[in-house]
Each structure stands twice: as structure tokens, then as C-alpha cells.
Image 1: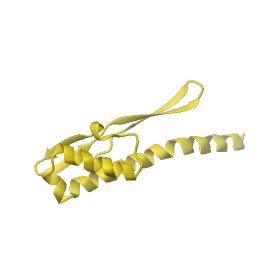
Image 2 (image 1 turned 45 degrees about the horizontal axis):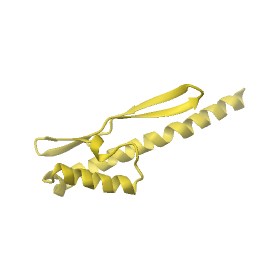
Image 3 (image 1 turned 180 degrees about the horizontal axis):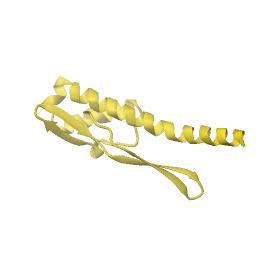
Length: 104
């Protein structure tokens, strides 16, 4: 019984950890873009293009440039995204994870 629980937790961990890592990478990209002085005066298209390049390097597939909400708080660039990851577990049981990475 203990071995079964250990295996169950290990398998669940292997499915859940990668989406959290990808969310942290997205948040890191947002913070890097928001802190770049060149991005403060960039157009929305330029910001999205820069995100696409960085996302491609990090193999980010869950969020595209079209999913990003871009705004300004005074002179500070704010980037946000909201997305959901569905992880099939067993049969018709699915784990739903909601992420909200932000530059702030």
C-alpha cells in the first residue's frame, strides 16, 4: 500500500511540476521585458515580438503573444496572462490548473 501511494505521488508530481515551471518562466520573461528600458517606449507589436522570441527560446507553448495583456501603470510596463492547463489523470479524471503570471 505504501509503495502504491509513493508511485501515485511520483506520477502526479511528474505531471504537475512542468506547468508550474513553465509559469515561472513566463513570469520571468514578463519581468525581464517590463524592466528593459527599450520596452518602455516600444509598441505593442514590438513587445509581443520580443515575447515570442524569448518564449521560443524557452519552449513555452501554453501562452502566445496574443494571450498577453499589456498595460502601463504610470511609466511602468505591466504584462499579464491568464491561462489554464488541463492534465488528464485517469479515465475521465482531469486536473485543471489555472495560472496568472504577471510582471508585477
